[in-house]
Every structure is written in C-alpha cells, then in structure tokens.
Length: 97
Image (cartoon, rainbow, N blue to C red):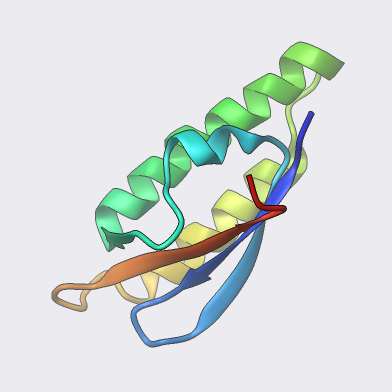
C-alpha cells in the first residue's frame, strides 16, 4: 500500500509534515491548493477514514497511524476555528506522483 507524507501550511504560517498509510489523500487534495479550514478538516476526515479502511481491508485491522494523524490535524485546526477566513495550504506530497 503506497504510503505518503504531505506538508501543510496553517493559517498562522506554521508548517506540519503529515503521514497517510495510503495514497487516497491524493483524491481529496491537490498540492498547492488552499482550502478553507472547515472544508480542509472535513476532507481530512473522509480521506483518513478511507485510508484506514484500505488498511483494514488488506490487513484485517484499522490503521492507528491514520487515526492519530487525523487527531493531530483536528487539534491543530481547532486553534484556528475562530479565525475569520482561516485556510490551510497543502504544499506538497512525498514521494511525488
């Protein structure tokens, strides 16, 4: 299963490097795109759920790393929930497509 890392820029200009056990995140996000915060979190929930289910289908158990990464993203996003116009930029995916 092709895992990947991806980089984000948060509304305050800080960066995160994130992990997904599956390349399904490429179906939900595009490198270089800017997403409104709430849309970004919603898409993350969908994407990480699918990634975890792909792991379950292949190995018989959900991916705890996908769940942990989603929780980290949700925790960081919550810091900006009251910031008008907050957005997140998906900088890139590693390895490149």
